[in-house]
Image (tube, rainbow, N blue to C red; front, side, top):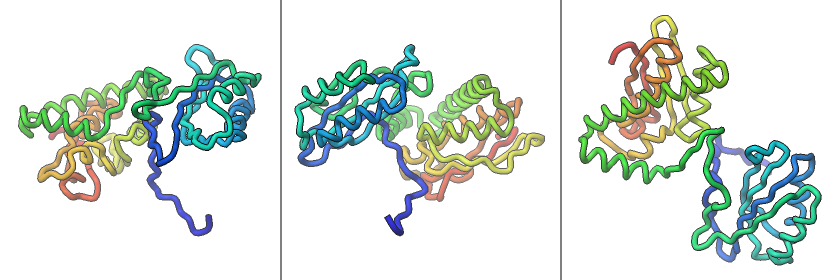
Length: 269
């Protein structure tokens, strides 16, 4: 479209819950496909020819079966020219299809054909920011802001050390490559858009900028800086990168009205 520009930030909707528009009739389908060129196109053509609207989906290999992959999608069949049963039979007749499962997501349109959730090869869970806020708000009432800050910082530091060590060992990363991988991991998992500045390997110092930091967004508006888990994570990860223990201090915070969160890495708080 002429004159149309995409935003720099393009959200990725996790394939767990679909929004149904008025008049739509949703089904979820999981198709096991042979890993050959054109397999996905053949299956999609069956649905398109039947006037089925493919709303969203994902394609992955089947764990333990590298010769197979699966395509899972939410479909709107409200204007389909064939029944779901007929679609299933036609898909099964394709030489590239080994199995098909249709399921109507009721009472709510949750994705239920897959479990568990994996981040890479590691099991993961999804926690909406509203749930994160409710959890932390409850803990803050018990521990008070100062107590929660200490707990979050320590937990974040352990998490940062673990994540950086795993990336270092899995991909053989060191120095600036490890820092880049960590910033990529934060963005890929929805924690924020991170940027490392002025990293000094001799002085063990540097600055980390995080835009849309999930911790600040979850806390909403506060009169004090809130990203203690995040600064702990940065301290733990930086300690692995530098090979020596360092700490991190938050000097700007989105929750207090700053444009973004900013953290200083240093040897002592």
